[in-house]
Image 1 (cartoon, rainbow, N blue to C red):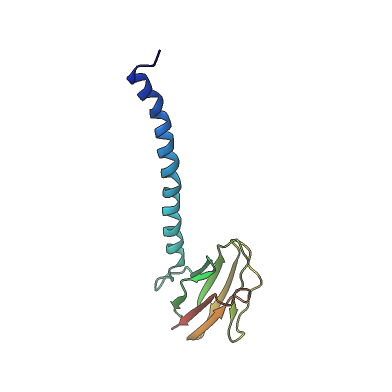
Image 2 (image 1 turned 90 degrees about the vertical axis):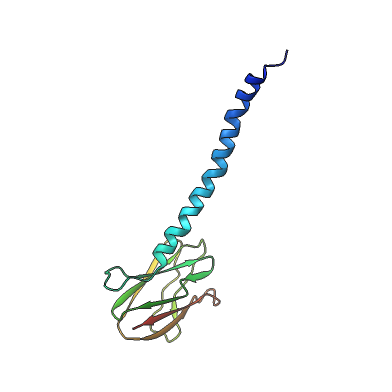
Length: 131
């Protein structure tokens, strides 16, 4: 004997709810992560005490260019699963290899334009503009 249509509908409902939950959950988490990273990657606002933040992610520095006031400390954070370095083109600063979630900071005291790269992945480049 076959179950009534009401019983069949009730049997499918929990499975459908579970699929919707599983499909919706990763999207919700993914949507929040880039917004949080973008907020962390923005330069510090004028007068703010927080240093500038640069994120190494997906084999890129983000933002690629950051403008700060003289005296500001910039912190680079590696969000990749691969190590990265931060090396000034002029030799002014040089980090060691940064593993996932490790940071390197440097205080920029003199106005100017400072270019840097990852010595492990030379296509990763960035610029700090100090006013």
